[in-house]
Length: 211
Image 1 (spheres, rainbow, N blue to C red):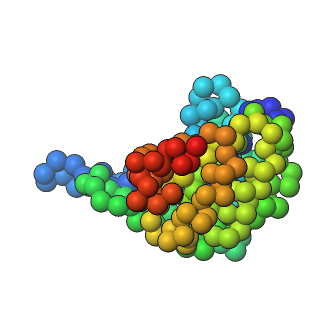
Image 2 (cartoon, rainbow, N blue to C red; image 1 turned 30 degrees about the vertical axis):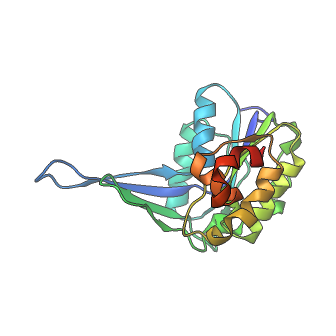
């Protein structure tokens, strides 16, 4: 761990329960782990030898304890993770038979993120910062925090729209996520979600429009 991480990521990580359905006659099993685009990227970067810090809020519950334990084991810098005694850690449930995941994240600790959560984070010294559209769709505070992260950054600003249905602002994805895109240097996204950001009717020209 270095004083100034190479990469700083902001976003929510949930306790994740994956139901693994076995062969006929076998009882399903549950795999309990963690899930979050930003923290997953931090784990991958740490494995590659980079200093990767994840900034967020977690509840003071068992789910938050386990998330921290697993990310710490993955080599992620957790100095700027706050524990919120008033709000829970979010949960995600899915199974291997397919279908959309189910979330229990309304009112989660991460949904209370605000720009001041970045006050002591050395954002300007990082070589890169990362945030996804999910953070912008968690609530007004998280969206403002995401914008603050990008505006303070002096290094590469990476944005992944990562559009998800069912979040607080998913019906206003363009309004909430485009301010992140406008402040990015590197935009990561699939064809469909990038087209959605600029309007479905403009899909053939989505990439050119975003550029």
